Length: 232
Image 1 (cartoon, rainbow, N blue to C red):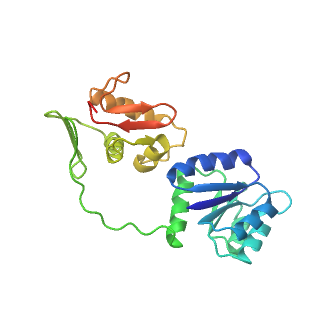
Image 2: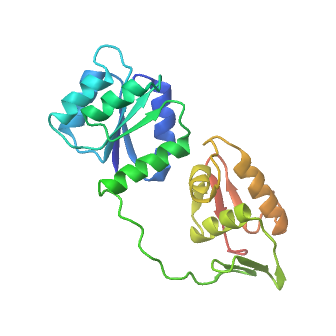
Image 3: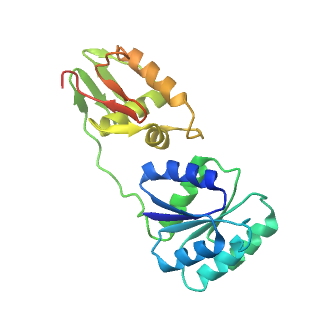
């Protein structure tokens, strides 16, 4: 899904892009209002993230130009968070509003909700029960949350089980920290939060894994983690 960010804050744009790209978005950026409006109306986008406070052509004017030609979903950002800004933006045709104090997870949740409402993301269909997953002597039951290593049960916290299941579903492929956080976290972790590494460390101990020579969970330096079958 192609996403356009129009914001003069280059650092913020890059942080948002770095977070959203592993989630399946192709992210483009424009840092000036006139050029942003031009690109928004001449290319196809799943959604646009638009800042209100920009020098010259501000976000409200950009939104007017977009709405004159397109119904593309628009989420507006404001550094001030004032009610009048939200009202003006919504009256001009914005689909959602988010203050710039947002967390990365809130942005993603609102963006996905917006895309569901506009038909870009289909509602989740009922899924068939998942079968037991077997990796050597490690067995994971997604339905009962039982984990067996050899013939011994492994007691995991919900977060640890979620991490293990996420890695198992991607068996052999690398999961980034951002992907693991998005799928597993039950609280708002920042994209740079290292709590994910601490959970992985504890999970390894419970699986009897040596971080220097892991049997199950390998670290792919600078990227994330990978669950493998021992001996393969």
